[in-house]
Structures are given as C-alpha cells and as structure tokens.
Length: 372
Image (cartoon, rainbow, N blue to C red; front, side, top):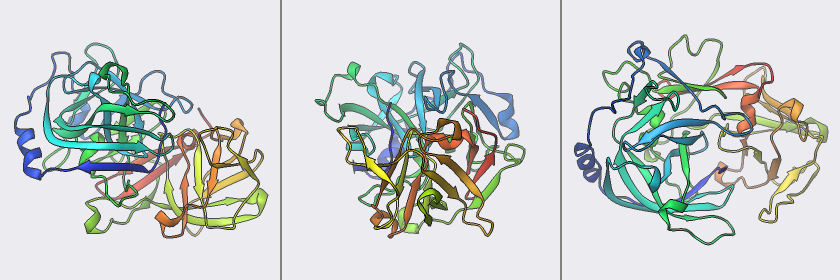
C-alpha cells in the first residue's frame, strides 16, 4: 500500500487548447447501471467507502474511470489527482499529448511514468450493480504505463502495474516549485459543482464515508480554520493550515508551522528546526534513513488559536491512544521557510472527522471519542 507525501514530479505540459479539445471529444452520458442520488439536487451526496476501509487499512472508494470496470482507489489527502494503472481505465478517454516522468511518492520512493489523458470519473457508493454514483466533468488523469518501486526493477507490463491512488488534497507543491492544480481533484469537479451547479466544492471525510458538496448540516459541530490564498503565481488554491507540535515528555516546547492530515500515510512525519531532538532511534527499515521517536514519548498537536486547542495527541507505541504506527522525526524545514512541518497521517482520523471547503477556503475538524 502506498504512503506518501511531498511528490517529486516532472511533467511535460501542453497548451490549454489541447486539453480543451480533448474535452470536446469525450463521450457523454451515464452507464446503464448508474443511479444518481436524489440528494444531489439539494447540494450534497454521501458515498459509503469500501468495506475494508479503516484507520489501519486506509480509505478506499469504488470508481470507474473512462467507463472502465469498477476499481477501488485509495483516498489520499496528501496528494492531488488520480494516478492509475492503464489496466484500470476503460476505453473512453482522450490522450492530451502530455507525458509525466518519475512522479514519486517520497515516503515509499516508488515512482510512476506515463501519459496524461482526459476522461470522466464516476464515484460509486458501493460495488453493487445499480449503486448510487456521481460523475466528474472531463478531467486530467495520470495514466501509468511504467512503475518503478524501491529496490525492484522497473515494470512496463501493463497487467503487472497496480497503482490506484486518488489524491484529494490541496496546497501540494512539489520540491521543484510546481503547484498541483485543483482541477485534478475529482471531489471538487463533479458535474453538479461550479457555476450554476447545486453543490459546493468541498467534502467531509470519515473512516466510513465521504460527503461531497457539503452543506451547513453536513458541517454542523465542526471547528473551522480559515485558510489563506496561495500567491497568484502558484495557482488558484489555498495554503495549508498552521498548527503547533510539542513533546511534553521530552520538554520540547510547541514548534509551529504547516499541518497536513494525510490519509495516504499510516505514520507521522515531524520536521523541526535543528537542535530539537527528543529521544529517538534509527528506523529499522533497511531502506529508510529516518530517525523515529522512542516509544513512550507523548506528542501533542495543537491549533494556533488563543486557547491552543488540542487537535491530535498520542503516546508513541501505544495504539490505545490513537498513535500512528511510527513517528519520523527530522530537521528538513527548508521547504517550509525554516518552520516546523507536521504530517500527522491517517491515524488522526481516530480522534476526529475532517472537512475541506474549497469555496470558502477553510478546513474543519469534528472531534469524537477514540475510534478505529
């Protein structure tokens, strides 16, 4: 299972006219088994995740891409856009003439190459025939034709490539400074969204379901953080929220910086300035150079408000506290202007539900009792 965060991507982009031309050649209509939920008219739709979805296993949704067979994709708030093996696409797509090379998930080191295609994506509430579903407008998708996994030979046999990731995050800037466009996010590009549509661009994510086109009722009991716009040169997107992390058991005072709640990662990554080193040890994984926090260390992530409300807290190595599988500790802060960076990972959802409102520029958290 892939885990991630900052993506290193090399893209060869063509002009916008090429993409627009591809849109015009798309086949329209729905599959004969499609059933659109009546709630779409009132601005919201809730889709159940695949039955194996959990904090431990990740969140998975049934989709059909290019009128292909239904496939389970992993929902990843730590990236943006679909990365999918060619074998999982149907025939209803149009090549854009663009390619991508070595799109890399940094936590695993796995990289993928292929071509950009224009197609529709249909999101299903289950794998059952006649299940309710909603569709996107034609959008760009990364179709993978070459897979290179860490420590293994690269693979070009289409039937042997099994990547199926759906990135639904925001403010995902790669190390080369290329901003990932929100038009790649399926959850923000449904046919009922946008000008004249009935649905707002946003979603509520829990370990069991996803609610799209959020309404006031959907976001009741959420605590929201207002986001700032990214610089115009970086595209129409919102900056990641801020938070602070401390390790009280090691007398590490709050270190504040950028926050990422990453559903594509089953562990946490914390980067702080040099010289801040709670008890830690070398990751036993031979492919890793990371240092890990020792068991027994208490980690507390707080929101940057006057009350310093706790967002997520746990004791390393103690699953009963909602702890991730491990906590990587480092000092790579250059990409964050020397400030701290917290990727709290998937296990954050053991203590809260997550909402993203792309129209109003805010993220929200609905706190609940510890649950897996």
